[in-house]
Image (cartoon, rainbow, N blue to C red; front, side):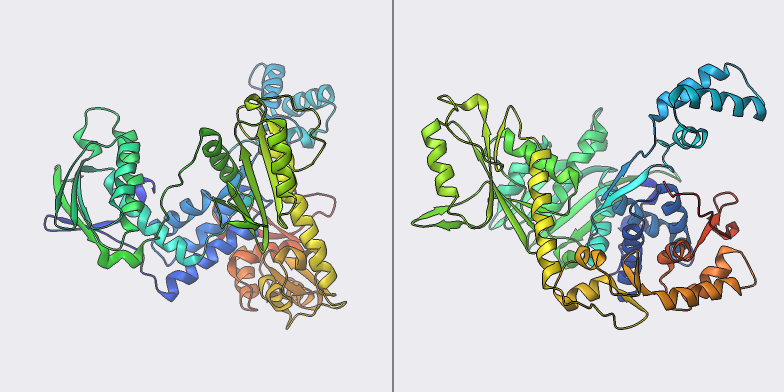
Length: 511
């Protein structure tokens, strides 16, 4: 769901119409540019990313851009990067300062605290506010496809609208068993009737309740993807709109608009809480690996084996089996059978479900014992090892000399040309080229850009950026290019229009 202030809807008579994003080439290009901006900002601070993204709001509906940014932020992992804990740093500085002080006393306090912590004054200042929203660092980002992003935006607009619903009616002809299961799982208040092959369901809306409206509204919104993923559906709702007096407006949507929304597979079913917890915990890490419950069967001699989980990424695969009650003999037989599987297999064993001693099983890096819940870290270690070997194998397949088709080229295009992953190309770029975000640029081209900046005649960021963009550099990559050729931004407030281009101090390291 999107924040309510980003909801875009038109009222016509007594009807409300959400303003969905059209799936046009222009909108897809905007979505792709925003995705590229997030990808290029990994390892940098959130505040700079948000400032750079403000440029996209000019010329477009700012609520649409902010809606896409909100969805993309949910695919990010941010972390605080500092030498010491920011809370500790602030507490020590404030306790030492005691009262309001001038700049000289402030520097003295910082020096005293830095000495007591055995760090530099610069590191202390850097740590003081490192946990603030604009200072946290984008550590990882899982990019969606541009079409998926636009469809997710349309879904979120509809879900946000339903937060103001007095009630919702929907009709479906298939998939009712799964939808009904979710209705009960979410605890929604409902009534249902069947007419021929059509099920008609009425759901109370969050605004029809006296309490728990936010929780109930969230549950109602979570049901929407299951409805939209069927072939035939129709939704009608009564939406409360405030403003010039409270009004009840009608909302209608049906499967003729189905191509505007993503289609979701049915909600994962698990044999145990352990599997459900692992599934949720693994997906929250956002490693780039796709985790699937009960993937395709694996033939092992005369046996057919269906693992509990399958991991997939860029042609790599790994499987995991979670063992329930077991004896030493049973586990030894299972391990012996799994050794015949060509794919990498992790076996997770609950120590508390042992029906005999665990001695004599031997050591295996893929045999994982756990208590209560499967730990994520050892599984990630196995997957990282697979990635490392995969990259090494790709490096060996690469020809001695990798070539680019011009002064500037997408890394993805080079990787596709050589049949390897993007990470492999980043490890061994073509000679005379540098990796700049998601692009590869020649040293000569970067020197040319440096010359353009030097003779620009203005140090205003918009002036310099327009010159660089004229050379074929996408807007989101301009700041990265400037850093690569030895420049940085000096901010004057939060408006990027007021930022100035200055030569970077080679002694400073971006943290």
